Image 1 (cartoon, rainbow, N blue to C red):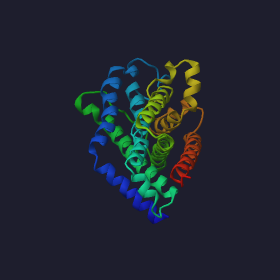
Image 2: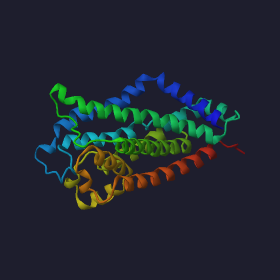
Image 3: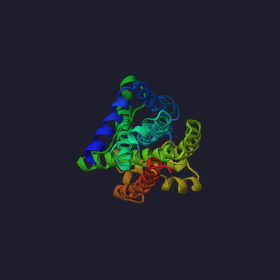
Image 4: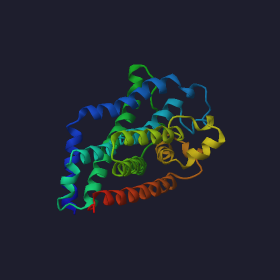
Length: 270
């Protein structure tokens, strides 16, 4: 099973590498958000530390949130690949090999996780470098040790796994690309806009704060912010590991659902 999983994962990664346009498109949207939305609405110039939860400026708060934003947007098309592979008969040929349905699903999940993790750190690096061209940038005020780096990496990896599983679940459940993109668009923006990725927490009404506190994007971003900004932990009710556990719960549930749907879709039809 491991050999099958690695071979199929390599195939999926090669397909991603041969499509640089998709990589550029996935990176373009967060860059535009950094340059337009983040720079244009730099509330940190007049917001208190409590509003931006310990971040020195709103842009720093916003830039950390973009790590979670990328984990969502970069996994949007992973389910569409399942549908196109089904329409072109590729999925049928793969499922007729000795590879198990779990290996087929796992390879797509692993490949789908790698791209958003790389893009998330690329966006963070870009945000840190923006002051060199005269723009507001991400200011890291905490000393990030090995444990902090591991926490940030885990948060982004687990969030990517959760949304890759979600979109794979949709891809294995529907048969038409139009249906897939309609469902994905109905999920994408509400999830992002009800998280703490974009808006300063202190500016949210109480009802939105309640929703955002359970949003998996918020859980991951809070781990990132706690580790990037000195003193930020005092603004959060829980430690970063509590948020990681909540995020793991979301991811485990979504991976299980997606794996079951993949097994059903790849099984023999009577």
